[in-house]
Image (tube, rainbow, N blue to C red):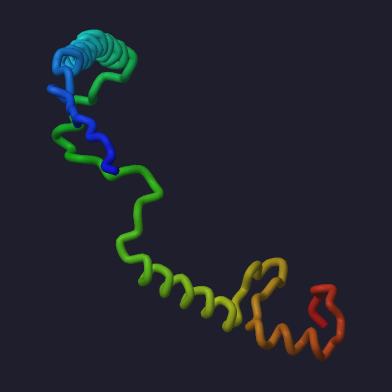
Length: 127
């Protein structure tokens, strides 16, 4: 037996355009209304800030643009690190006075380790 044939049907229209267009119009109107509310508020806040801030120095334009405050970005960080490491190595490997009046001297770190190992004390005082 053959199955009875059922007629296939489809919708005449897929989407009703009216509600989609109405929603788009409402969204555009909300955006315009928000802009109309925000723009006067921004103007009021800008004028309030202008009243509260210090007046511009008339010589500022003649002096040119000032450098930004410290700390500034490093332009060559690897070179800066190399210079720092060299300075640290020089300080750790050389003799120098820390406080000559008090008799405090810096000695190379290898020499300090050898002195501590020979003395056997770890109280930090020189032998």
